[in-house]
Image (cartoon, helix red, strand yellow):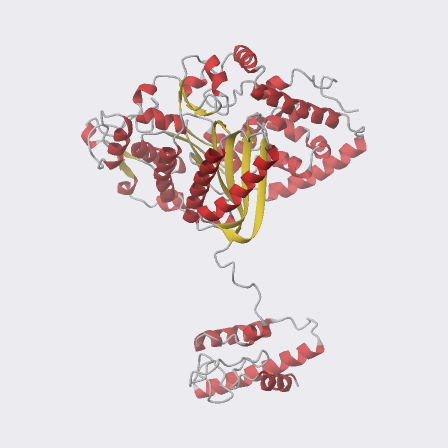
Length: 629
């Protein structure tokens, strides 16, 4: 029987603390007194629904661990076979390693909190968070020193930091600021991929190539004016200030990218940026701060997985570049905690910990065992992580799988309030879909109740939807279904989200296959030059076809006849000096394939490729028979 390294199964009672305990892998939470903070969290949460839900989920994870460790004896032969499979896959993955791209992950620093501090400067020196007593969306870095973090109930945060200021969320304001930031992103990568309002992936590869030939004038950025005003007026003035105006904009952190300039005279303050990818990213962060008075952190790496980890390396208000070499990547990954990697959450971390795995290097050492204990999808992901591999190409809009929006709030049970919020979410989602030009057939409703249980309901339609009313029509029915399931008790919610997926192209109504008459009418609406190009293309393809290819007898005759007619037509037109277009069978059709008198479009023979002067299908069939014989 395979056991943990200490030979025992995980305890059933201690484990639930790990789900609620301090996660000091998050930026701004390093070096805290874990024991003290965890004790406060436990004492405050005991007896709450949050505690009961976390305890239940932790017990489920412990059961999974016990089942995993109680699997039948894994023999040396099984491990040897698994190791061979792992080695083959490693070789394949190494061949696909791409170190040529400059992928950048940008993450705004404590975004919601930073916006509120900008608009209310008296909050700057206070520990504060955005959200409610039920749940926090984020916290500033002063609050994080007390162990306050996102996705923590506000009542627990207040125990950790009694003088914590909790500001209600204002998503309209955050969305407006996010749009300003995205305008800057488009200058560096028009096809950037937003992950949320405060996070995005960009590919700087092409931008850096162009940047090499830029003169200093294109790489010079001037400081915007700062003001002594506060609140939203301050943000507005900072956006409207013209380049070259005096004074520096206020910064939220001391090591701001705009904290030094090339001129002691504030009236002429400017910054000249270099041509490297590091300088390009620093310039982008500078522009974000000058426009919004908010700071951003960034990671630069050969792929998306590493770029995200790197963006957390020098937070807040910093950046880190991982050199694009295999040696640098493997060294970086070696001691990286598995929890730092996107896609490895609380559950995966605990499962791996039960196997003695805490770092990415451990993943590589025990990959054969993982391949026997985890699903194929999971261990393949672990293998790529252990090798520092990820996507080197950012999915563009047309490759997007889904789009969603969600909102966390204090307890909500009134039907009217739930419907109103649902409609707001549908409007927000419809606006995002409109910007991307997307439509989808599947609408999903996500709900979290007061017991912290998450449920999703989805409906796939026979047609795509994109407008707020269309999405809301489906979402409200899904919401009603969930309310009916809870009846006669009210549906008590604390989170709601709406997602649209199964996207279709804008021309989804066009049939993928043409009818036989449509095929035969292929000359309709096409110019003579277009038809000539098609015929020439078919001629070339026919001549390039392999002579060893086996054709059915009828097709052989048709192909031979077509080549014969095409050769004769080409010879005739060359003599007449009319190019490569074959002469019509009669003079009754023009170059577009239509009769000169405006009658029905001519049919095109699929054998000789000539337009026919009669649209009678009987006559046309006899013509095809003659061509075949």
